[in-house]
Length: 543
Image (cartoon, rainbow, N blue to C red):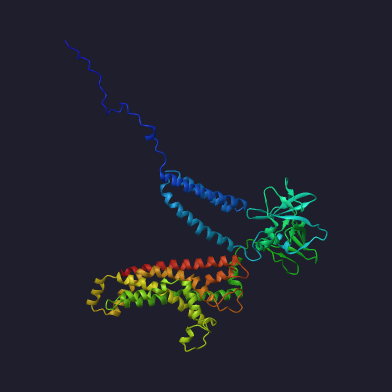
């Protein structure tokens, strides 16, 4: 007979059981709100988006679709990266990538684009802008044009005109032809006093502001969308008249006709208006010219010979600007690395002073010192009248000396650090084996120093190849080369030649040719640097 066990009492849940009810947390404890870090990030991203939207609007108005598309991608990428948790590495990489794209890739790409165009003086805009510029140059006042009461308008940085024609107020800008403005008011003097959407500039301001007067005199407001209908101009800021050009533009035939002479200028593929006799209008537009700029560098006799001279001097200048300062810096480092020299710290400080002085100021000071009339350099030659800056070879020697003075302290510091890092046990072992100082210098010290300094020497060569500051500040690339097609001089290197060809210093600008030359310089420097870095691996065998 079996006896059933009595039923066990129900288990009492322990206080630690998951089924136990939890005390209800207060609302304040559960909602802590965003931290300061999130608020700071939100504020920074708001600034980034505001700047991005402003750039997008500007690019849209200017119809610059490449800039518009690039900025749109960057803004969206920034929002996605910084508002998601999965893109943690990109949060640190994105700023650097953006700066790389904007300041390196974009600039190089845009330079390459300009290199394949004729962009420069006389070819700085579109064909429509060239047509408008040509018509403006031939403007004459229409004989039967009435004089219109006129007021000068302003909207932000934009200026415009408002005239009264048969009681109606018409307003426009250089980009927007005249159009009727509803709600405008005319004062007792007959000129518009209130124009909705615009600020009427008082006559007193127009009279007293000379800069504003120049802008008003240069302003032309088209009468209609057809440029042949003329434009409104004013001389006093209170009255205007219609001016028409003696040139007539035929968009269908792509010609501009001079009505006074009957000469017809036809648009060609080079971005110019050319007549049958070969004469051209000053205003042109930029077009794609393919490899013409690159071919000019090698096929134009005057340009090719000048650039060949500049290129040879560039290599000589860059090479000597590395070898001479390095040799001088190494010699001084060897001397003042000797423990027997007293006051080494003080003397080292004196030798690095040129490195602490601004390079452009040093170049300007030496420019005065090498002056043939009152420079102190000629006093060292017993008052001889030596034309340092006027003779090509003397000018080159002088600029090499100036660059030597400016750069040897850098190599002095580098070589001093390399010498102090040499393994002393190796030198002691060589001395025990009977190696003299000359043999130690040739077989141990120099190879080990070159291992440490070779990358710096290569980068210094690239820097000297493009050392614009010393060349420009010392002698502005002079003296000039006779017969050079541009304002090039005997001490010009390629980078300063590019500066002169671009017309930044004055004169005609040829941005297409300057960009093509920039690409070639980049290829040469990059190629030499790559080869040199590969060759420096052989020096590692001495380690």
